[in-house]
Length: 117
Length: 117
Image (tube, rainbow over the protein chains, first blue to last red):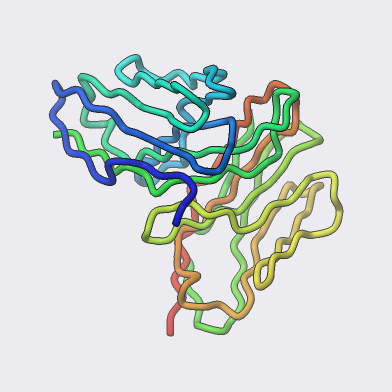
């Protein structure tokens, strides 16, 4: 069983819908991430949260809105998405040892397969 | 900016044989970490092995080992005694070991490895 759980596993939505992706980690980590995985492209880091504070926004369009209520939960709120946003969205977590950087490996969830109609 | 290149989009190997996946990267940093992740059809990204750039000794994890050539900026993965369960997408990833780097992992595009019976 993975230490990082993502729901839903699959999501199909229209461009005008509003939906949210959920990620929960059971590893006691304090840093969480959202990645986008598109076909034929490297994984793209979207957001980083460290101790619930957003520390990275990798030029992500505002139609993606992250939320981190605590160190164990991370959400990605979606609204008015475009067809090119169809992808696998992966959540990850890691343990930050302080100092603003971490050499600890990131643990990933199984992802949410998002399809925009 | 860092880049990671995996020049082999697909590879195949016979069960019990050895295969090497290549990875090169470009960086001006002296301290960094390198990772190999595996993503089977189940979609979960699983850490296979990691290497600290300041260590000259190549990392090994059971059947998995790396050939880290820092001057050449090369980080290949060798899988010995290949098993059917090794069939997966393999991603090479780079992370700076610098304070304030915000834990950024830069991924390559991946190599799809198929182990044939």
